[in-house]
Length: 470
Image (cartoon, rainbow, N blue to C red; front, side, top):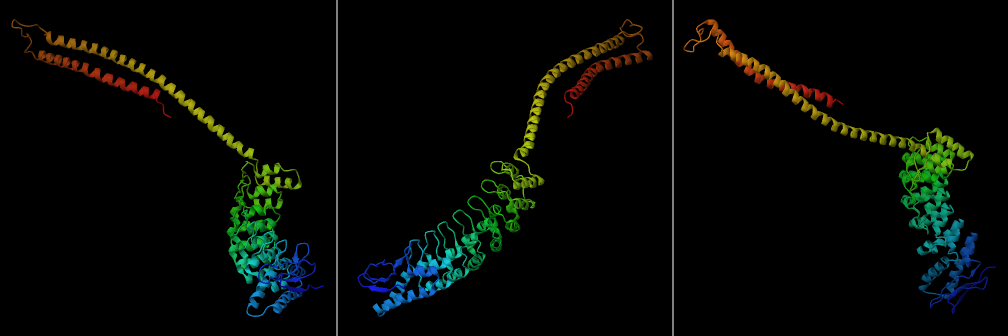
């Protein structure tokens, strides 16, 4: 049964009837609105688009033109037809979907081509309750040809976003539609940098799902995408190791090997995540890389070995544990033990040095007292020795003095020595005088030199005893 269309001058609308329900346009100008039917208040155009019935879509559009042609003439006809047709094509059901959206979602490209010329720019940007517009829903379902039609019509549609800031690219990448991803990237490669509200880009999502072709295509556009992190600090490698594709992991590591040690906000490296997810093959793949630190610590001070030890026993955990140990994995407590031992050794050394310094201070005080006593003793010894030498010297001087003034043979009456003119007496006198002078000089010289030499010897002995070499 086909709907019949009639004009209503009172209701100002075009009616198509299946169920008797109608939408009446309000206002002074005529508004032509199709009859709604079905559980979501779909129009007849919605139903035709859902079936992919392009002939019915054309008939409905032609019927609108014919109805308007019978009621309108003149210059205003073309504008009114365009406005009315656009309102019909852009009519949304209760799900927020237009007939064009419905056709794009189901992949009916001929219906899309038929409706697109009557759709406004605003109509293309309309979103359903899930936040998808027409291009986004086509990308989500993997309809490359329809995506191409929309981008030919308006290239800017590739940057539209959903409620979670998802672009057609991120959605297609997450769902593995590589042909759609290629089409979108060929139009505008800058969209690879648009992230979702959680910070994840298309590479994060494709890596998580293990879509090798898409990961490869995205890395070719920019290998540095592998370093981009989401709001949790996770790289695409963190996402990849949660999945099961070792090939994706290899692609990411080939693009940038250093990302293997990049931690997230909780200090988890890819190895920690892979271990926690029990990905045996991926754990082995990560450990083949020389940059991987098998004993890296998480924020809560756990190594990969600690993580696997806390997992329920299974074949996977047992195998992962064996692999980790083979590459030198240790538990965090074992890693800290050498540090504790070193800390204890340093403490002991410090205490020993302190004790030695204190003992040296005490020894220095004792040595200082001994040194004072020794100085006193050697001063007394010097004085005694000097006195002894002086006594002997005085004896010599006394004898010499007596010899000078006690003249052999005596004196005559005039007090002149009897032997004054004798050569032997003259020699005796000169020798006695010389001896006296020498003895007096010796007393002074010997006393001074003896004191100096004694002090020098004692200083040397003191230096040897109290200031030993280190």
